[in-house]
Image 1 (cartoon, rainbow, N blue to C red):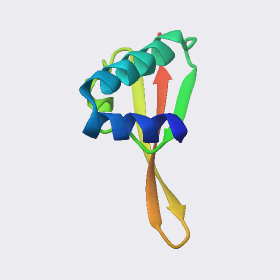
Image 2 (image 1 turned 90 degrees about the vertical axis):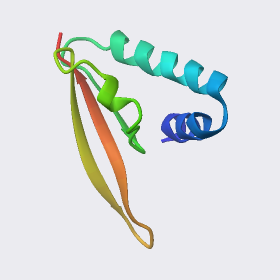
Image 3 (image 1 turned 120 degrees about the horizontal axis):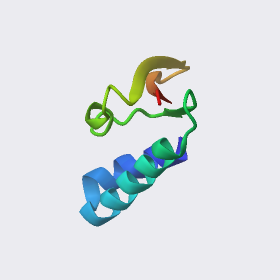
Length: 80
């Protein structure tokens, strides 16, 4: 959750920091073994659509959080 929260904050406040988080995000995904997953909450709707569907499977979920409602979560699986 920490990574995605900081990434979302950077996305809205600092282009340079957002680029650094984007590069780290892609390094994490490319570093996965085939069939490996990166699971996180909050979802990153500004990044996930950019992932190549032939290389990554993106699954979104809603996590119920008492007194708040729901929080988006994502599971990215490397296909090959």
